[in-house]
Image 1 (tube, helix red, strand yellow):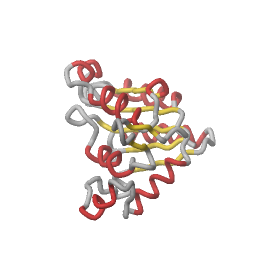
Image 2: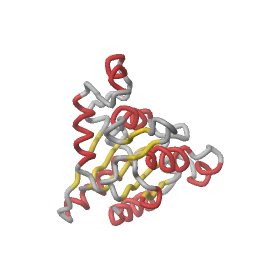
Image 3: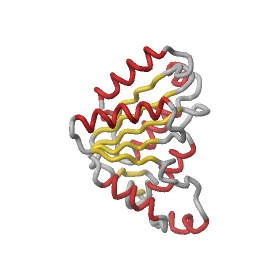
Image 4: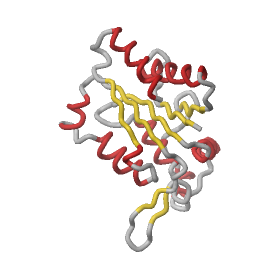
Length: 193
């Protein structure tokens, strides 16, 4: 099953248009999917003291985290949709990683070496779809590339989502481009997913 993790607060955003384009296409194809809509769900990305007490045990008292983990267990494909803010993931998505990808669920740590072994091996394909007001080349070269180098090559890989099965698709200059280019991207992205 495809699981879409969506992180944007405004239904009028281009990110929401991407989500809508993809979900409409999946519905038309009668392909099963589920959406984790972090803002709509009221997900709180901030750890509470109570949650932090459970963190190192790989546990959580937060029922929404448990629901998300169940959805991830059912997944064979993962799609992230988010804007790049300040050269990085939105805090909401970072909080999702922090709170949902717990030890014993998403990874185990080798006690001797400290290296991580990813446990989300049921997920065979991952697509990262991002938007920004700048060019992808600039994000990759000037900003230290928090998306490819950190999120994809480190975080997702440490969770068992292998780099060779992860694709990053970025829509640049979202605020400066033409409506025609935006419409074309929506058409293309719905065909890819």
